[in-house]
Amino acid sequence: MCGIVGLLVKTPALRQQLGELMVPMLIGMTERGPDSAGLAVFADPLPGTARKLSLYSGLTEDGADFNWHGLTHALKEHLSVDSQIEVKHNHAVLTFDVSPDLVKQWLHENHPRLHVLSTGQTIDLYKDIGTPAQVAQRYDFASLTGSHLVGHTRMATESAVTPDRAHPFTAGEDFCLVHNGSLSNPNSLRRMLEPRGIHFDTDNDTEAACRFLEWRLREGDDLETALQKGFEELDGFFTFLMGTPDKLALIRDPFACKPAVVAETDDYVAIASEFRSLAHLPGVKHATVFEPAPEEMYVWNA
Image (cartoon, one colour):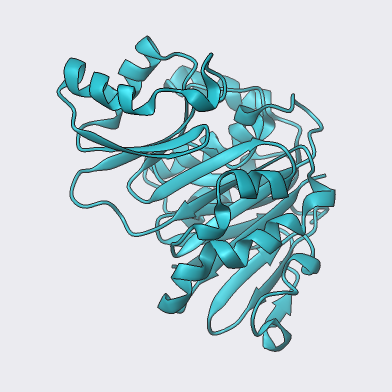
């Protein structure tokens, strides 16, 4: 059992309140996921060819004392890469204007225990073990701004409670997924994807779904086509909530075993596993509230 939350604001003025509105949503899912929590937020894209990595230092020897500014100096010295770093506890967002593969390869060779959480032009990602309230306070989720976000609280059932197995999962650039449920065929998905050069970081079943859908997008599918192929290939019980730079998407398996509820107003679209995580939102009494149908696609534009 896990909890999912999502929020997309339609009114530009609410972009500054995105994190503030989200924190009670995440904490409302504590009973569904007390082990770990995470969030991916999407904001305006970086200019030109600039990219950013969300990084986690909690698995390194230094943990929260990791020398982030020493990292930027080393990138300048060894790769001639100018970069900026924004640090929150044991997470940091590293911004630069070269190929992200070049930077990730250097990080892998020189800081193998520094975990890359996400890559892109629009996405920042934070996840860690602890209750939702602890994680939200640790990374100051209430201060986050942007157009939309995807969040998750985890109660582990099929893999260890570790930061890298917490949700959201990402693949490629600017794509993330959270999951309530369990898949019965993640190993067959891995056997299909690994010969295509797709690397897996964990044994979590959600990662298999995330990498499958991102692979379909990279192969040229639009989001709706990729999701339709997901219905055909993903076996098990699931409610999936996904974020891209300009979309929020929700699907449920053909049996709709895992709960979800949507509240939509002129100002926002809010999604949660249970309505109690939506009850505090402004104007929710006048929202259109509904339960998503099984094996249907719900896609909202940011």
